[in-house]
Image: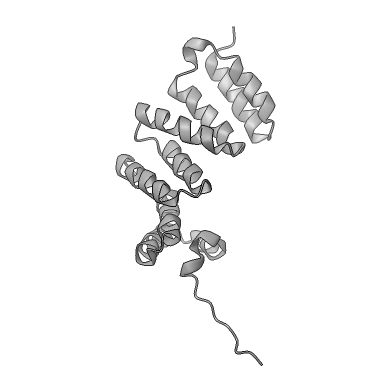
Length: 162
């Protein structure tokens, strides 16, 4: 019998290659007793994210968070799935709860929160969070300039009409 960890490794490899049916098949080989383990749910979450199966992400993320609230990935995925469903206020609220539960949130947490605050019209808070991101990692400036979620923060210069 192949151990659960091996099935998960194979499934993650398939996900990386974009072979989602194969990943799902590999996950189906996991014993029923192991299917609710947080590590298994985590790989199911990665598959759902890759497939853009937002309902599955929204369903799986709270289960993973309940097992380990300090795990950043499900918080980010959950909020992102809500954002994709145009539930921006909920996305912001979920990620704010996550930021409080995660011991050392990554730059991505603040970046995504900046996006949500910007989309909700709180440009001051969006700018504050974005400044924090840039202080921690200036490489994010390029992404921020091109991110449509942050469009309200971009200063546009227009040339006068001839």
